[in-house]
Length: 74
Image 1 (cartoon, helix red, strand yellow):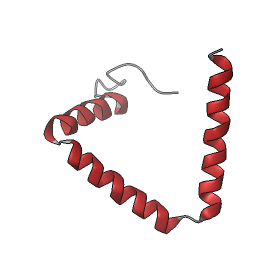
Image 2 (spheres, rainbow, N blue to C red; image 1 turned 120 degrees about the vertical axis):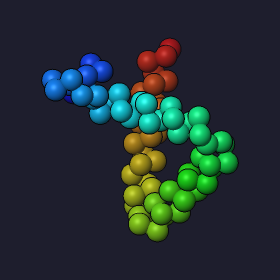
Image 3 (tube, rainbow, N blue to C red; image 1 turned 30 degrees about the horizontal axis):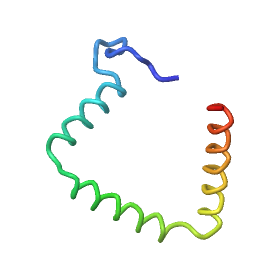
């Protein structure tokens, strides 16, 4: 499980806190176009590295999760 404390045992920043701070800094320094570009690059890379079966599997997982969420929200 993730350590929810902002400091670890050595009084250093936790990975969680470092990630949060880095994400906030990135969001301040970049605009929507930046995120669109890296999303497109990531999608193209994923497409090159995976076959149709991969997309079928993640689609099925997503569909199951959505159905579970819908059942829980009723």
